[in-house]
Amino acid sequence: MKLIIAIVHDEDAHSLVKKLNTAEFGVTKLASTGGFLKSGNTTLIIGIPKERVEEAIKIIEETCKTRKEITTTTSLMGDNSVMGMPLEISVGGATVFVIDVENYLKL
Image: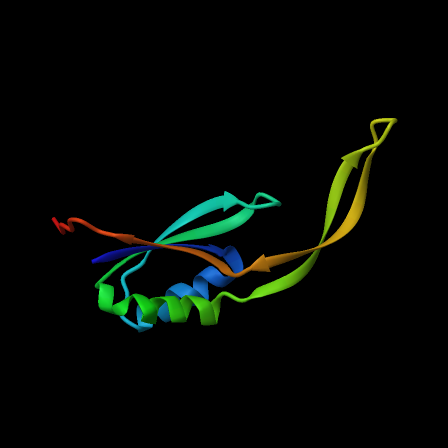
């Protein structure tokens, strides 16, 4: 048994959960925050047999593509004003952890 923890961009979460459910993976969805801009992420927890790990990772990889986005950074100037600076960043993709499960109980 394996546990996949996948941290994905909020924009990818809905379609990813739908595709995983269609492939008969049970998914627990948690709201999370993090990254450079402290933007919304979704953490998915998926418990599966070790034989299906590659199948799940392939679905995650196909669904969660990185893309470029323009955002505005803020900084304090000498007179305490805030100035926005445009910045191109990569968003999306997925961070995936695959963990061995020593024991699994469904009560």
